[in-house]
Image (tube, rainbow, N blue to C red; front, top):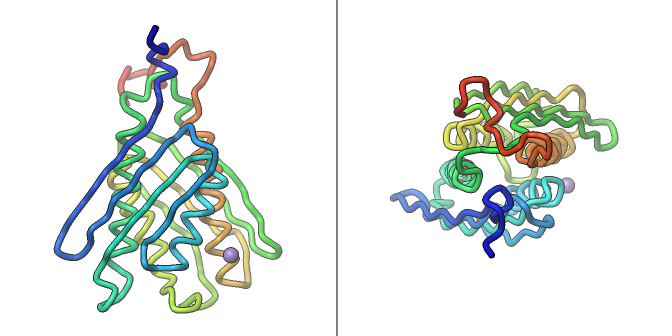
Length: 203
Ligand SMILES: [Mn+2]
């Protein structure tokens, strides 16, 4: 017997090659938080590890980008391909919770992320980083990751860092809260009867 359709594995593999980056992502939304990350940008690997761990998704990301220029294309394009993988793994979104939110603190820092797997791209990103760089990582790239993600996951995401003094903590709480919010939004709603969570009947 096949598993019921609503319990089918929600996995995706997406590859994207451009003149700037070559990226492969494997995703299991019903995973256990395992990750295998090799983007060439260590701080991005650290952030994606948080998404996998706290999102309870299995995530493998391999990227070869034009890092001799800077990390911009690589970080943006990883956001794009992770977004594509989420959209592909979700399929028609039947039985989905759809909305997710989380607050995550780390010492003095506190961030909130709210997700709607709405079918429409939208990003509100409100993070006043206290430093321009975290090690060699340009903090502007956090926004680029999420812009790439929402454009291709077709999701509305509101990111707010509510307080924080340490830029590493600010960024890490954003990615941890994103993972937790994603976990909630992609969860299956056992009361849904497999319905698509929209009065329109489509997302
Ligand atoms: Mn850290």
